Image 1 (cartoon, helix red, strand yellow):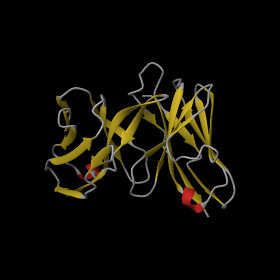
Image 2 (cartoon, one colour):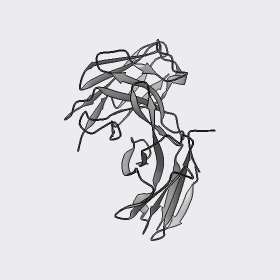
Image 3 (cartoon, each protein chain N blue to C red):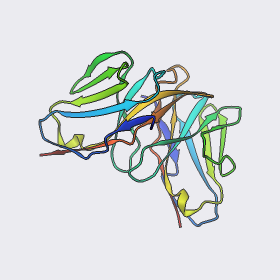
Length: 113
Length: 117
């Protein structure tokens, strides 16, 4: 079982719609969860972090966490063509040197105008 | 916000040569930096953890003698790909958590595109 799993997509939504991205993780000891956005050829940029069960909203983005189900999601409201990118789910992992991030494969989102 | 730079942005080299990639935290100090590798349409894979003043810690399957890491100061880590081969062609990205921010806050460099001919 992969540590962090995402549906690779592509996920296609029309402009103005809600995009729903999902992620599951295997390590029940994980405590920190992140969503990153990555444009082609660029490095990831942080969109949201979430640490507690429930919802966390930031503008058009809402992250949801359910630790019992080991499930994290990201909702993007009023999707815009500029939201078209690959969205990476990341989970913290304790390693010898400290804490690192383990990434999922990413879900490609395409928002059509 | 905190800024991490990488140099070079892209590099093309011949098979068998060595390539050094620098990762710098520009406005904060980091005792730990992480090196990731990303192949096309794949996720970021953690290669190793760079520790200031001590040896790097490598993930399973990553050859420490091939990917040399040096964390010379609190703001600089280098990754040297030795005897590079075409299969080493990839996007290499570093990240660093600030000393004050806790390890959960990580800032990514812009990445280095390596192409080995």
